[in-house]
Length: 340
Image (cartoon, rainbow, N blue to C red; front, side):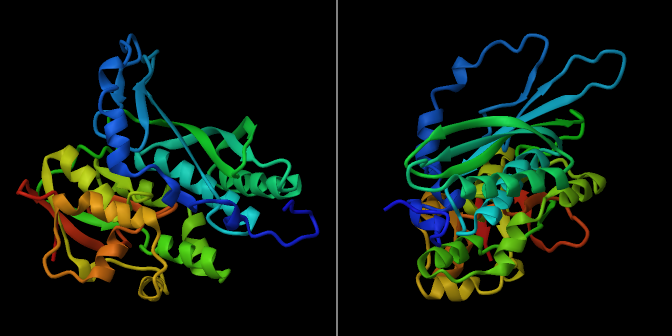
């Protein structure tokens, strides 16, 4: 069936999975990438500071210093299928999510290009225009230029951005810089994935989830740097447990999480209770299980901690004023993550 401009369209019905829940599962992705690190080219005069090795949020290279302080270029790309039905909101969410990778490295986004896949014979282009309008608005809020992009005819709609930013190479936020004794701070609540999944199933709109997803991680990044942090990641498709496992593994530490301190978006627990859990979330939990000591944590909480977030917050090794401390890093033990 072809949608028209006069026909109400639920964009989430055109996607097999919504938002960051449509990512390739982390275990499968690591299998694919595992043999590629040796193929990296020589760095030349732009040394690669962050690449494939630790699975960080973006690539970082250092520019040659020319009469001033050295600068680092941060490069990333992120796009996904519709996470909400409203095209303007989807554009805003996807842009905020793509920009987040730059903030997660301690950078400032400078220029982005759109990435758009559109079923041109099925969905009207006025909807695509609304998606792009949403992306432009969030990029403008971030002070980031949008200089064009690339589009393809695709059976499934997808949107996102490739983003380039700048950072101080001596003040990066890296996922391999965690040290024992540092507290863990989370800057956005969890539960976005289960609410998005409920939205897809029922059409219910969750304003609190949309507001959380469109919020930039710019201020959290600035606060983390001001507090002296050097280790962070953002919480997206692999869930809190997945991203925390990667951070702990890269840093050679164990992360201890106080489950009672973790914040959730209103309605998230009810969505889990009612069965609105994506396949991506269940795959996340399966992947982290061998590396996690769950203690007596109940099943619903485990699912929420593994919930596939879209445009989630920063997870910072350090205390960030105004945001909850949810645990700490300790010397490496038998597990990457311990729940208490």
